[in-house]
Length: 613
Figure 1 (cartoon, rainbow, N blue to C red):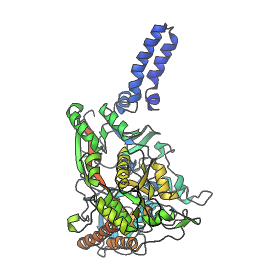
Figure 2 (figure 1 turned 135 degrees about the horizontal axis):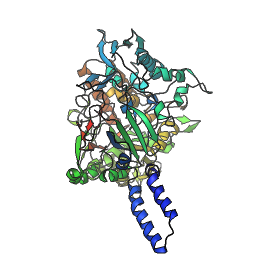
Figure 3 (figure 1 turned 120 degrees about the vertical axis):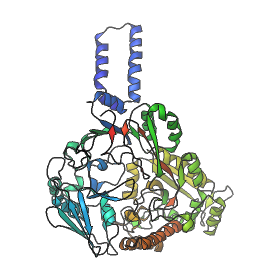
Figure 4 (figure 1 turned 45 degrees about the vertical axis):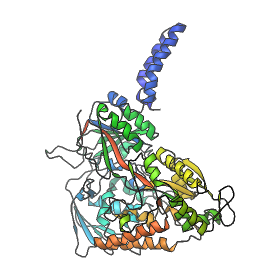
């Protein structure tokens, strides 16, 4: 428990004193009241970093509240957010969160060949790792060739780097001590922007883990840098490095002494010495701690908390920031996989017939009151979502230009269901053509109270259509295991990123062989599937994503991705719901905060300062 670790000495001293004194009955009662008055508030704010701050060395720091723990310290094996990598790593180039423009990072410049198939990056001179070792072109080649492009290392990164119909990968080679060249078999429009999210990793630390195998023949890399690793052994190149990790309590980041960036006066960045990631169990506790004067930031801020904090903004000495709609899509999805594992159907054949009927999915979409979600759950601080591509992307297709939308029309839902052969019994329960009651389970991650509330409304809405929806809020890791491994699920609700400003980042979802193609999971060596069926519309979206990556003319690319959005809204592998606006609260002691439309109050952590520096 955080209380016991962060505040051990004061509590031990109190109880030691108690043991030294002989108390009367009255005094013992009084004493335990005193102890309770001290300890109970500490229990409420034990994770409150204000307490930690007051007892720690007085250095400049920012404390942020995060729900849950990091899942890994190995970037290549990570597929969740939040994670630690934005603080500890950089790639060759980066994206300015305010403008969306590409900017130099570890590479000081880059050039694109006339045939658009080679990119040459020139590294900055004198780069170093957090352990003081030189960061060189050899590290770049190792990161891509031996990790990201290695077929023996299963990583989502390969999905966004695959090129063309043959799914080929780029090649990389060293030109000289500072230049590295990437080549693609054909023009590949997303390559540069994809490079912004891929950090360079240390060859001198990790090369042996890639080369050596475990007893099953797998690279040791697959079990390297888990969260059980001593954080100080994680070698990185970003503004911060890991200093300490205490499970379910905190992650501490310390300024990287070898970070390359300097400010206009030549002073090494970042300005702030330490970042503390304070782990909390849920959003309610995160809000409680912030209102008690704890963390310096709370993000994402729930819409229902916005009015409350708005009243406290001046007195609490913090500022509320409002961005655009949260990037990504909040949706529900049905398990469309018609295959088998070990001879057993992945999905109950009765349910599978419902889920794979497009009229059923459309009826569900018309049967959910999405505006009610915006009004009641997002408290009006939200928008309807109609596309898997984010509205901030230049490739987003708005409804007024031909994107189908599903407003709340329960009568249309019932008409579609009847047209698909469903019927109602005398109790108003929905039955299929064979008389089976329509009943399925909807799961989401229990830690997110927001999503749990949405599932409760969906249950009510679909109940009015005669469907029985059983809610199953479960631990996030268990939910991911069902989606990625056991495939034992009917329907789920989650928010998933739409690939950023360039839709190709969503290829891992929309490619029929993508690692996140959860609605019809592909067969994998460790998850063989027999008899999988790929629908024509599904194959067409996958093909269009390849075509979009090959096209360099932006106008033509927009037309290609417009088709993918029209298909996804017609056939609904995802049923988009609504997103809240991006909201954050940041204490006024943090200066130079520039809140972008895509969120992340600390995106420019290198330039931020605190008034107590």
